[in-house]
Length: 347
Image 1 (cartoon, helix red, strand yellow):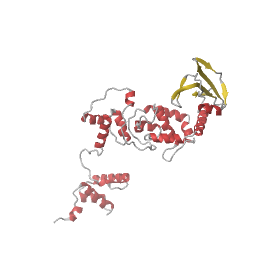
Image 2 (cartoon, helix red, strand yellow):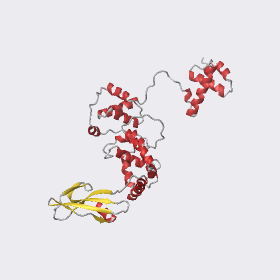
Image 3 (cartoon, one colour):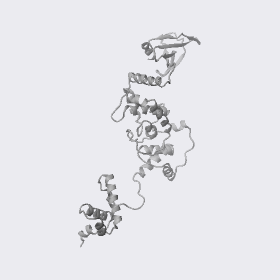
Image 4 (cartoon, helix red, strand yellow):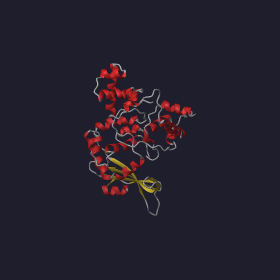
């Protein structure tokens, strides 16, 4: 007949023995020496057990994890199959080990490059040949769910990135107070993304030479560009599009005024002017003008090339135009126009 009383009075498993001993010490208020003798512990061993229990319960908030049975040997990673699937999927698209690691880091899998190399080697993949930057940018898209963007808590974290050079600009942003100008500006912000992190996200992509946000979305996996903006990772392409739609001309003008004031106070500006180049289309019947490329209409058309110069101190805008008439250059003298007229020319 099974004696259930012995199960509690004479525990066999280590975890149960620890539980019963600590229960007697805390609940029955027995002395440590008495409890140690009752359960066969040495006095110092039992006091160490009490110290470990206090440390664990304070860390895990009394969740009872201290008494979970610990098995000897190496623990198998539950996500090992998922890591292998992602690594294999990316290598089939000719992604390098460094790119694969960046992608795995972004979705929360902490794997070394050597581990990725061993996975690919066991799967029969050879080393990739040396490729140019253009070939790397033409990699086929692979759908991986990136981590949701959030503001960093700046806890210690190890990761590898190819965008570490961006961080060299942060001391200059702080030195000239550009971060404060952005924070005090009227740019949009949300509860999860303040305006400072939002604007720095745009700056991170510009500095990283991404000409089109939608052409390559692997940057939203890179923690280096995210760190520059104070985020875990940069937002996705749709966020950049929707944010740009909310930015108005007045927001940009107010920000540029404050920035211009900062440059003046720092002695970085002298005789300066804002320059812009635009193509003025010609819609007449007599097509005597040569075709020039118009970026706004995305095609070449009969037009005049115009240079607009804006004096930031007086607000005066000057325009200089040059036309092609029977392949003979015709240059008009520099004329002053009102800001309203200049805006009409630009549009």
